[in-house]
Length: 471
Image (cartoon, rainbow, N blue to C red; front, top):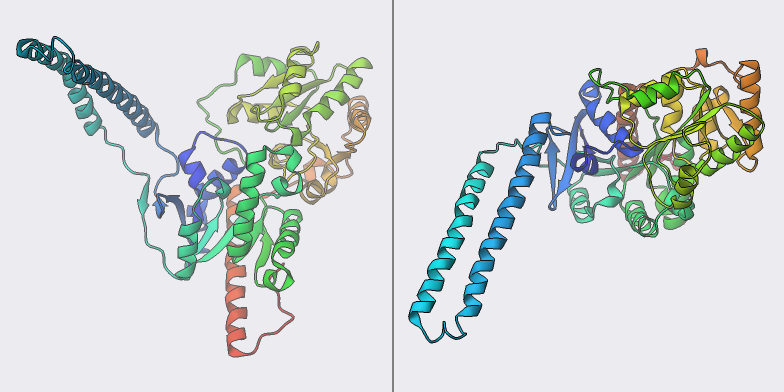
């Protein structure tokens, strides 16, 4: 049976991150034990030119505490060494000078003083190193050997890491390489991204287009974009040797800790009885928060008491927006912003808001949409293809060129109490993360096996030219 090696390097090294891609990677990897009947699934990372099997994705509380202590002790040890070395540097610079050059006794006395001073740091350094040696942190990843029938699935944001030589070596050994594509925004909408990311992503995509055996996107919308972009770069003939598919993401919030509580400020807002319209995302230009402010300002001017609440960490290229929010006369009256909600508080917000409002210009999927709708929270969103794919007629769509179109939807909802979508939320259902992980593994295996079958037929001289690898 082929093994599916699920790459999760960035999340492994940054377990504290909880944005979109990190959520996907963490949830898929944590659900792998439930889908082992499909294939042997092994989470892996790249490190120092090697591939390692992950035994534990995130450090335990005790390991995290030990790790923090270890880092602090290492800093103390480095400081002690630096200070000790300064004394001997001073000693070496004094020796050529008078009176040290002229007098053996002066040199001897200075040496003794430096020795005493050095000892005052050597003893603490020795004790610190002993403590470091006694801190037992179990490795969370161990070096492994790949087999020629393995499938390397690049699930994480792999454009951040330079693992190209390792992957190419594995491919030469017979390992199939499959890339998960979340979106092509740095290529299709570079104005929304930092310049360095655009360059890094373009370099990465050029490599992955030439290297990967197949691509699996997080929506059919992105799958079609990837197929077009790979064809543009490689030409139709070479692109036909790759396969293209998609899977859908799950909806649970996996870091809801029953022991944690919701902060009073969050409770006060969502239990106020006011109609709170929620926007959940990193605050960056592509998410189009300014559109929401424009729409809600018109509602407030008309006397509406609806509340707009931004939830999400502060990202990039947003200085003007953040300044606008901080100086807004409705701040903490009808306008709120929380940049550090944990999953318990996010769950509470989803459960007590009136609607999610999501005006993105472009998305690969739109994870907050399914998170909200799975909890019975209706969604108003920009009318873009991927939202139509995910939400269908359960979502109420507005025109990005007309903020007043969102205002009309909200006013209609507030006055009638009927959400302005053609299908009711009671009929909505979506897959969970276990289903998502199973769908991902199944489709990767199907496509890899199909490609092997086509190649075998080609070798045997019986290739049916009507076969292709695009679902």
